[in-house]
Every structure is written in C-alpha cells, then in structure tokens.
Length: 113
Length: 116
Image 1 (cartoon, rainbow over the protein chains, first blue to last red):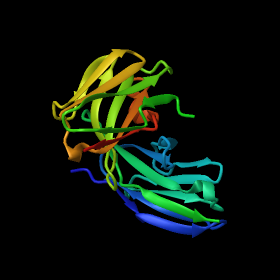
Image 2: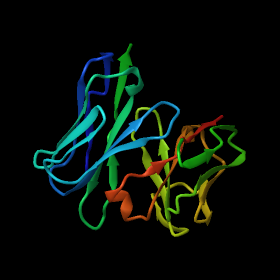
Image 3: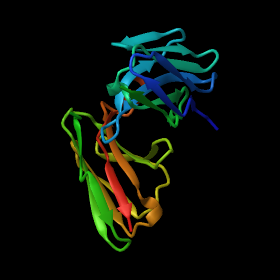
C-alpha cells in the first residue's frame, strides 16, 4: 500500500513568520510529486510539479524541495501573509504501468494578521 | 477564476431524489475526472473519462452514474444516494490522461452535496 503523509496536520503562524511543512512518500518507485494550494470555497490550485531528486522550485514567496532518495518534499513559505491561509496538499505519483495519484491529507495553514 | 466550472455549488437531496452534478471546461482538455472528498480525508478518485469514453471506474456504486456528452462537459447523475454519500464532489481536467502525471490537474470549485 502506497502511503503519503503530510505534517503537521495544521499550523498557526503570525503574519511575517516563515514556515515549512513536509510531504513524505515511498522512496522507491517515484515518478513525480505535485503540490496544490486549496483555499476554502475555491478550487485546488497547482503550485509545483516536481520530478527530479534535488529539484527546488519557487513561486513568489513559496518554494519547494524534493528528496526522492529519502522520500520527502518540503514546502516553504517566506514571510507568511493572511492570504496564504489555505490547505496545502501533496500528491505522489508512482512509476510503472499502474500509475496513480496518491494524495496526502494536507497541512492546514492559518496566518494570523 | 477557475477554468473548470461546476454547478451547482451546493445541493441538498433526499435519498429518493434524482439529481445531476455538472462540470464544464473549455481548455480543450480530453481527460476529465470526478473526485469525492470527505472532511479530513484526501480526494478520492471516482471516474476518469478519456476522449469522452469512460476509462476508469474506481469501483463506484451504481447509484453514481457518470456521463460525458461531449469533450467539454462531464455530468454525474445521482440516484438513491445514502447520507454517507454527503461530501464535496470535485471535477478536474487535464490535457489527456497521461499528462495528469507530468502536469497539474485543473480543478473546479466543487459541489457540496448533502444527502438527507
């Protein structure tokens, strides 16, 4: 059974704080990892698609790193703003013929002004 | 604004009702998906249509009946649902089935379904 875990489950930070959270996935049979940002009452919005070990991607104040050998990805938010409040989901895709997106439960981030 | 539009936003239905959820995209995507998401659980894939044909049915009960009338539209027909079917139903699309792994899915805002 392929398992994807995200930690922490929820996080409260003050505006201006930098924060990070983790997506852990099976280190064998890796194909890709997706990060999504999901605000309440909106659609999940893609942040990053990561495919190579050592990848680092950046979008504004948000960046992500990937370590496929040890099976984790970090998402960093620099100088959190209230509008960053959302659930951050990762989805692991396994290699092979029977490819699937396996979703984590998400990290719920609340940024207090 | 999302490029995948779902209607209605909210739906309350009784266990004997028949209703439909609708999803529309005009990005020229040829793969469309229905996901179900319950609170504190990850999204759960239900159906995948590829070039208007049903490609994947993840052992979904027959009280859920998908339909893809054309390349832009995806429906989910609901009949004789149970209270435990109450959830957020998300539609998504991608260029084609293979590209969902290399490129992100485009999601709608979802329909919040309550079965009474």
